[in-house]
Length: 317
Picture 1 (tube, one colour):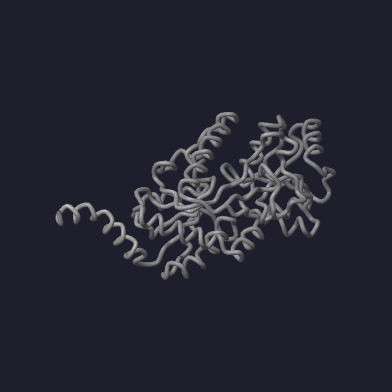
Picture 2 (cartoon, helix red, strand yellow):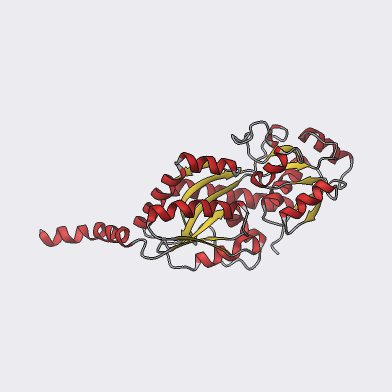
């Protein structure tokens, strides 16, 4: 009987040992985008508090390039022990449809740790553009197809996804002007080089509040608690929705006990009132949740992203 009890208890002892030995060294949060992006900001906010919670340094490492795929590939190949994490976003689930040489499968090669929230982009017009609403934009675009120019950060970016979805659903034609810098796009919008810009809400808020950008609509399905005065594009284009999800993922086969520890600490940090205020100030609507909630979000984003790529006939580059 004693032998049987010991055998049945082995998994429980193993799970306990995993929790007791994690973390054994600093934890890295990989970010696939440059400093000052929403992904980078979120990772650094979380790293500060998770350092306190986990008792080891939590370090943010930026490996930008290929729409976040370089960082994602590194994490997919890392040891699944909880010491290497990825600040994931919609770019992760869309990557295989954008780039030919993607080395990972979003749903198979990562284990979700937990949701962070959703961040909309906002469509803005320049100060000298005589367009004050989504209805006026649609009317102007249909009256002169291809005349209005908008700044894009390239395939897979929030600005690109949001505009491709809008063009497809509203049946309008706008000229894409690629930019490698959101700051340069903002400068050109203010000077009249382009008429429209589709930055993240966080990046646009200072210019919106200063009256330099005229907000036309958010990509969220509903108005944001951060800026309830800005309408959702869906109010003019029914069914529209293109917010970016953010969450933390780990390499596949992460031990259950480590996943539960990480999720518990992540949700505790996101539940703190100061953290929620900082996220909303950054244009993110916090929605902390379980690993299962993040997996469902990823699956839905992958399905909708594939449908958009099929609809616009996009081929991987």
